[in-house]
Image (tube, rainbow, N blue to C red; front, side, top):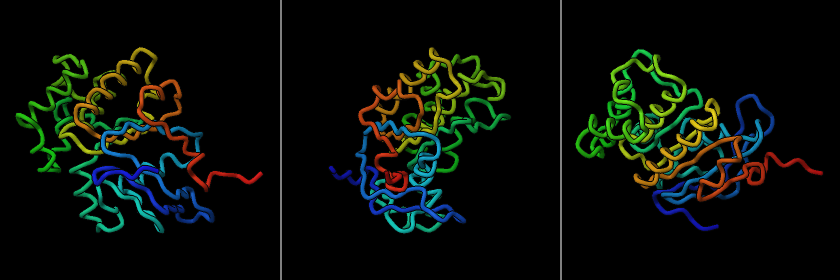
Length: 235
């Protein structure tokens, strides 16, 4: 396996068991993704996809094993340092979007920069200008930008969620089934916008989905049950 560079992702000797469970959910010997890779992660429910995203984001910590993101093992950081690293360098697109419904569209997109001075500093022309550029690139009408997020359609909220994840050019973007609520036309448009923005930022994208029709859009494909030794059932 080719090693990831210092700004990529590396899993090594990884094992994770949920509290109260007798057997591990994930056992991965070695896997890496370099900066700029776009990785489509597939597998049936229960194969460990959400657990993998939790480990990559530092919300979960592997024991034993290493989950290295941007050259740093999450386990080497204390809680506050993990929170700071996550705010600085990670963007997350949740399946249910997790927008703050009472905030405007612009305020939702600008939110990550309120928690990270480093991320705000990477916004060319300032945070407000960067938020507006992202919303325009997602083809969200400017008439909606000052509206509360709760007033938007599902497809519109999806684009706002992606803009929020991408603001400040995070080095790693994690996406958890972000197209599951979209019809074919909205899905295709969303994917085109997302991949264009990820490429422009040079971010690594780890994208979890059941929709195998999307796989051809990515530079790499990961069938998690084939990598995860905990998911292999002896014949």
